[in-house]
Amino acid sequence: MKNERQWRDDVLRRLERLADQKANDAVKLAFLTEERMEEIDRMDLRALTELKRHGNGAVEIKLIDKVLALEKLCEIAHKGGDGAEHFLRALESSARDSGQDTEQEEVK
Picture (cartoon, rainbow, N blue to C red):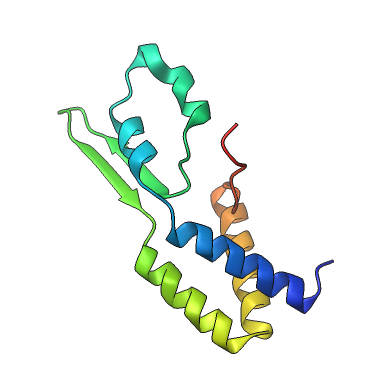
């Protein structure tokens, strides 16, 4: 089990990565053709929270809120201890509920 410091460091590291995520691959995914589906495995989609393709050709992309991630990062960095552990547990619980991992492996 992680100690308080490990929880805090883990949360800070994850938030830093979220705040630095680029949307390039998410946009590429929205317009990926059937013939190029193998490219998905090499994409970094951590910035992507939702993607919808509509029958009329419209595409809807939702990305992480970088400002919110930075705000949480500052808040936790200044709080220390409890906040980090509580926040990470909430993230993990939310990910389990939605069937997603809180942290995607590095590009494979």
